[in-house]
Length: 504
Image (cartoon, rainbow, N blue to C red; front, side):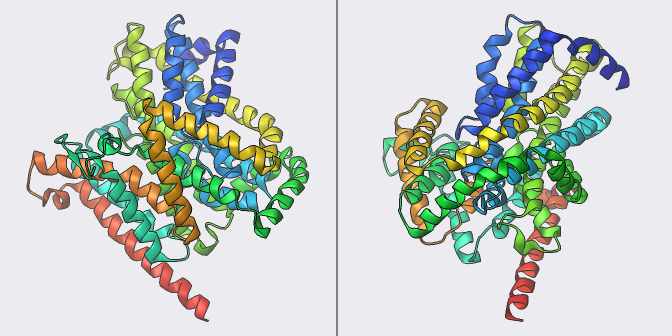
């Protein structure tokens, strides 16, 4: 591995490649902060530009976009409460309340440091134990994936808001939405009520933008006294810029949470190495585990520093995890790394287990490009932070139409369907009603994201072998199911303990 790094430094340390990596990071950050504009979409747009480059330069450019995009979702999640990417949903739970409490710069700064440090940790894992984790990931069949998603779904009980019942209703509503449209296995339409607008299903990104963004815009248009006082607090945030430009303070804050940082990074790396899992699952599970192991779980969701660290560390560490099966076995860990593999194939390089042997310079270049891109993300985010913070000071009547246009564009370019805009508006109205009646929105999004994955893997498992006991006899599957039960029992115990404290 050290030989690979040595070769990688020789390939990457050229001015033109370093410049391309930094440009890619900037583009990725911008793409990540736009609601609905996913990292995968940014990588796809970058791919044609790499055809005229040599393989190392092209891959380095896309690695820069990848790292920047995974971090960019933090910005809109913290400042606007709108996840820029699906993998930043859990970031809104604490980063946005922290920003509303008059500390937007602190929320951004903690998230940036967590993103950077987790990327470095995942890079270390990638370089040292890539083959071992990849071998484990290869053992994941539909039984293991179903059990893993069941574990991820238990977070619904942790983000239910003030009422567990309302939170569970919201989660079930999200699961219901995920069943609308074409059956993922057989292909026939279900729950469409003969409406053409529903035949293609309801894309989870449209639900994400509608429930979080459109509903929040509708709420912000209500000119209540609370909204006025909030805008007055926003104007006071100019003093936060001076604090933002002292990143050493927030670095110390993040380093005071070593268990959360390292644990969430390991979770993200392992989940990233599982093909098809991705940052959205890692972001959720890392946050959930940090809350479960916290000495004071009640502070989560109120602007907790530990919550921001966990969610962003779990999110960004999936970059290194995604690259593990990609580099070691030629198996894409996500849609993004699938595009990376296609870029290699365009240049006549065959991905697979022999990639490290046949093309050590390219593999080393991937490692070093990831390292350089992580530093590029850190520099880009901190330099741009003084401008990002000013988003919170823009008057509502100017901010709402700008965000609305971006949301509509993001929802439309996903599938180029006008019908998605109708669904976007409907989801916005539903999200607004949920907010008015104090239903948590996060469980809905979790249900929509994880619902199709759990259904597909359950049906694949039973189609492969109808013997349901395989879920309990396969070691990895039963381990995840046991952890699922423990997670549920732990959440119930935490809830009872918190209620007893309140009564006392």
